[in-house]
Length: 165
Picture 1 (tube, helix red, strand yellow):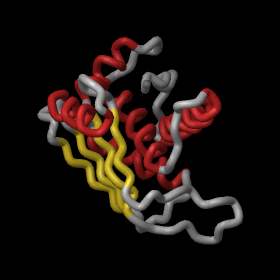
Picture 2 (tube, rainbow, N blue to C red):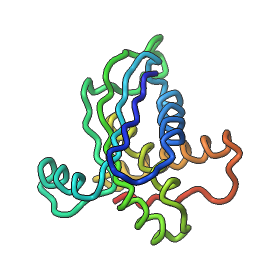
Picture 3 (spheres, helix red, strand yellow):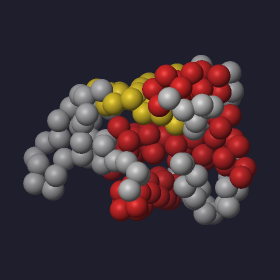
Picture 4 (tube, rainbow, N blue to C red):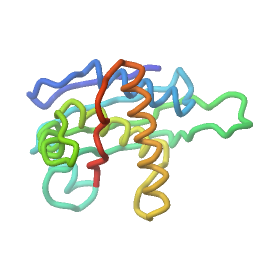
């Protein structure tokens, strides 16, 4: 799995954790090991520009996903998943810090960025949360991935509650 993490935000973030949880999520979703993903960490101004340009919404957001080859998790009967370019995930640590502090299970900016990374991966794989049933599926899968990764890394305590809108 080729995953690049590029921090352009000026904020210190745990890039290794972002890389690790992205790799874990993609493996858990059975994405081909030769697939490629890019994660870019930007400041609030850059995120706001992207949010306006691509979603026509004001203000910075927490995470945006830009799919490339529209890869999907393989079905149970598929022998080999296809490989390709998954796309880009853009994260904003300023928004993540605020969301983590305001969450019912208060958590750090880095924990929120880990959650947002998984959220972004799932969007790249075609998951969405517009409808209640889609939201239940996506957020359930997101929680299972984050919890699995945290357990594998010996992290204790409750995992971050979904704060992604």
